[in-house]
Every structure is written in structure tokens, then in C-alpha cells.
Image (cartoon, each protein chain N blue to C red):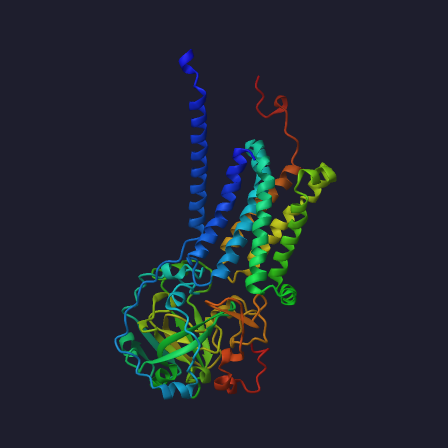
Amino acid sequence: MTFPKLIVFINSLIPLALLLWDLYRKRVGPNPLEFATHTTGMLTLIFLCLALAITPLRKIFGLNSLVKYRRMIGLFAFFYGSLHLLTYVWFDRQFKLLSTVEDVARRPFILVGMTAFVLMVPLAITSTNRMVKRLGGKAWARLHRLVYLAGVAGVVHFWMLVKSDTRLPLTFAFIVLFLLGYRILEKYSPPPTNPQTSLFPRE
Amino acid sequence: MREKITDKETYLNRRVFIRAATLAGTATATTLIYRRLNPRPVEPVPGEKLAAAPNSSQTEALKNGAVNKEQLTPFESITNYNNFYEFDTSKDGVASAAKGFVTKPWQVSVEGLANKPRVFDLDELLKFPLEQRVYRLRCVEGWSMVIPWIGFPLSKLLEKVEPTSQARYVAFQTLLDPQRMPNQRTGVLQWPYVEGLRLDEAMHPLTILATGLYDETLPPQDGAPIRLVVPWKYGFKSIKSVVKITLVADEPPTTWNIESPDEYGFYSNVNPNVPHPRWSQATERRIGEYGRRNTLLFNGYGEQVAHLYQGMDLVKNF
């Protein structure tokens, strides 16, 4: 692992370390189980947004080297998503399969959240270099567009569960909308003009 | 030229130093961001000790079915996990946002269809014989607590103003003052918060106005200085920081019903058989416990209150 990657790796684990530390010291309020669920859910959304931000950042600011960290950040989104799911199945359902299935079917926001998680599974599985080669770059890239859906489902899941104060989910919605909107605009905008035909010719 | 070339050892030392600094710097930044987004709970401000200990007669409490042998939820939990949108929409954030909320002077106007409508000063209200009532509180979000309230039956207050025969409902209103309740500047709910009960529900001996919990005056985050407690209904019915009580003829509007009529009915009796679209109402998490308990019809107060709803379709009138 290169040093910059190590920096990203350690910083991505710091929220988990702080969460565990606070849980251990009982400094997480009267409902620690809910706190753990909320925090891991929020971290999943943050890492999804970070992963989705890499491409726009590269293109807008020319920070091409950022692509080196995309896989790791995406995998951290999956990692925190798995923890989020674990807290639900563990604390909320006590690992009872039937009760979980029932609950997922009955509560639409959980169904949407579960969808977001399921969409991330194939992305995590095909994240290795070998899988990229096996699938071929194009097919791999097409498959990994599922992350757009996962991002949208994640935000909808958050938006559906709040009672009336939708400010935070809306913030995430705007971020995801911007990151996805950028891609759409970029796709349908004309190719960059060459210097000769630009608006302000340098003559 | 020779002195300009950094020798290998210095170079490596510098490299190690820069790396360590980068690591420490980014780690600190990440920690600060995390702490900023996830503030730790604040220590609750201790309330005032109640002047007079509640002189409740246990027999009265027994008669009311208000005796509860379940383990009490700790004071720290009751005062750090609050739904009180006038201050903050996050349950962990209410205590700090409500710190310093001024509740003196305070008046409660009892008006409407009554022969003797009048305004009560808080001091006057505190002179009603106070009782301790240990009640389960079940929030519509699927968690519950056991709280030792101090208060007096609402019926004692309503009797003083003599409701007329036209009065069939009671409407309640929370203080409207964005200066003192800062989140009222946002539009997360329609302000002021309003609630309502049928007159027979309001007159029921289990329905109380609470002015304290444990042996302290009500902390701001729990609805200081006076709030309603209706233990067989979801928590949001138990309106906080009440300034106005109106006797009316028709069913009054209620805040959460205005916000989302499909999710929150006027009655909102605790009922495990009527699922909420987003929360399972069959079970609840008792704060401080791992796992979930089964939710009881009328929050376990069916023996005392079920007769109020005889012949009513509780699914339709959720």
C-alpha cells in the first residue's frame, strides 16, 4: 500500500474507532443501539457520496490521481453499509430471519435500504483487479454504474425514515443529485472546443 | 555545491517526519469532523428540588391503576433523549438546546366552553395536591421508558372552570415564542404545537398534568414547567410546556395529524395491532434494554381505559 493510500485507509477507519470507543465508554446517549445504527448508516451515505465525487473532481479540477482511491472508498461504503445492516439484524431483529423478512416487507424504507445494500454487493465482489480483467473494462464499468442506483436508494431510504425534519436527507439528496447530474450534463454536452475556434481567439 | 545536497539520513528523517505529520494532521481533522457531526450528549442540568414532596396516597394511585413495579428509566436517559421539536429535532440535541429555558413567570389559560374560565398562575397550579405517578411512556417511534412523574389529575383543574354541557373535547397549546424556543423559527412543524383529547379522556383519572419527574421540577427538555401525560397514548399526545387549555365542542386539530394524517390519528392510542407505515408497533425497545418487548394494547392500561372506546373501531379510529 502506498503512503497516500494508507492515509485514506486510516482516516476511513477513524469514524469506526471513535464509534466503538464512545460505545465502550457509554458516551453515546440513552439509546446506544440506535446510535450505532444511525452512525453507520450516515457513514455509508458519506462514503457513497465520496466515491461518487471522485469522477467529477477529476474532471473539474483535473485531479486525475484521485482515481487511485476510488476502489478503497467504495469498499468502505460497502463496509459501513454491512455494519449498518448488521446493527439492524442484530439489535433490531436479534438475528431472527423470519422476523427480518417480515419487517423488510412491511416497512418500505427498510426495503429501499436493503435494495441499496444488495446493489452494492456485486460491486464489492467485482472490485478486484482480476475481476476487472475477467469482465473486461467496458462490461465492468457498465456494471459499476449500479452505484448510481445505490446512491439514490440510500438517500431515499434516509428521506423516508425521518418524521418531518427532512433537512439532512435533502442535503444528501442535493449532493447526490449534483454528482449524478454532472455526469448527465457531461455526457450530453458538446466535446470541448479546440483553441482555434474558441470564443476569444488569441490572434 | 556540496553543502546543498541533503545527506541521506536527514532526507529520510525529514520524510518520516512529514509522513507522521500528514497522518496526525488528517487523523485529527477526521476526528474533529466526526465530533462535529456527532456531538456527545451533554450533562443534564440538575433541576430544582420540588418544594413539597408529593403527598400522594398510595390507595388513590392503586385505584387508578397507576402503580408500576417495572424498573424506572434513569434520570439521565429521561433528560437526554427527548422529542421536543421546538428546541431540536434530534433527540440527543434537545437537552442542550433547551438549557436555560425561562419558565417564570408562566401562566396557563383555561378557557372556552366553561362557566368559570380563567388564567392560572404556575404557583397556583403547583398548589394542587401533587402525586407521584409511575407511568410507562411509549413513543410512536418504537421506544419506551418508565417515568416517575409528579403531577395532578387534569380533571382537578377542569373541574375548577366548570365545563359547560356543550364541551366535548379539550384542546391544548404549547408556548409559541421563537425567542425562547429557537427551532420554532424553522418550518419543521406548524407552530404552535397543538393537541387534543376527548373530554372523557381528559377527565380520566390516569390523565395528569405533570410538573416534575423523580423529585425535581420538570427539566426544560421534558416540557417545563407543566405538561400533559396520557400514558395509554403515544408520547406525542402528551403535549409539553402548555400555555392554553380550551374546552371545545368539536374535535380540535392536532399537530402531527396536520403534518401527516395517514400516519398519526386523533386518538393515537398505543395499539400493537395497528402498524405505523414506517415503524413496527408490535414491539418496542425499552430504553436501557437490549432486544425488544411486545407492545401492549393501550400501553398496558386497557383495564382502566378500554371502556372509553367501547364499540369503536380502533383500526379506523387509530
